[in-house]
Amino acid sequence: MKHIKFALTALLSATLFFNANATEPVLYQYSTIDALLAGSYDGEITVEELSKHGDFGLGTYNKLDGEMVVIDGFFYKMQGNGVLVEVKKSDMSPFAVVTNFKPNSQYELSDIKSLAELEKKISSTLENTGIFQAIRIKGDFDEMTTRAISPQEKPYKPLIEVSKTQSIFHIGKTKGELIAFRSPAFVKGFNVPGYHWHYLSDDRKSGGHVLSLALSKVNVKISDISDVQLKIPTSKAFSAVDQSIDRSKELHIVESARKP
Ligand SMILES: [Zn+2]
Image 1 (cartoon, rainbow, N blue to C red):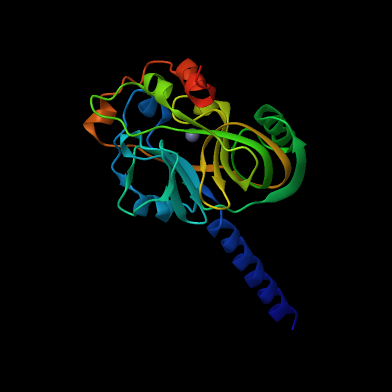
Image 2: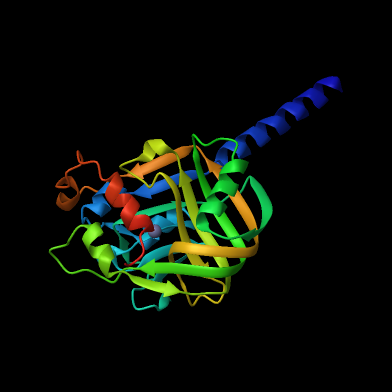
């Protein structure tokens, strides 16, 4: 009897161990942020392919057409004209980061006055800042300002030039979700160090790359990620990008700057 009990326990723990491995979230990224900054706006990956690697994420679409927001397996595009649409499976992306969202912690937050305050609060709760986090925040926002970029024509200009023509949306009071990644400092060159926030309203009418916000009451879900898969484009446009340039200053301006 003792033997049977032991065997059963061993079997159970083996099953649990297997499941834990099977559900380990992976951050799947297509191309690099530096290639995007340099004007590599046409990728070879489809939304269909991206959806095999994640149900949650962010990025942009070919020609730099709008802001990608991925939530619960649905791929949305906040366009420069202010209209949010669901995209086709055949649409393509030059830069995207997705994961199958599996939160390992959650908590409530209220009365946050700025993006900087939100980032500070979240950072103070993180046990490990040396890995990635996918962050999903749902609730009521007092203020939300986003941006989106309209499709570009060849020859493509660098992102720092193009971002001067971005559309800014003052969404104001809104209910919805933030879709974000926090990346460790060592990602410089291939992803955005620190936080990268996109937004999608519950009515699926607005969203985009977040420039500023204030929130009244939200639920925060965080998924720690220590596995990364980088898909490198094999296109000539990607290989022609000068990877030796430090573009971190450009990135900071592009990610956070408002229109003058
Ligand atoms: Zn963005």
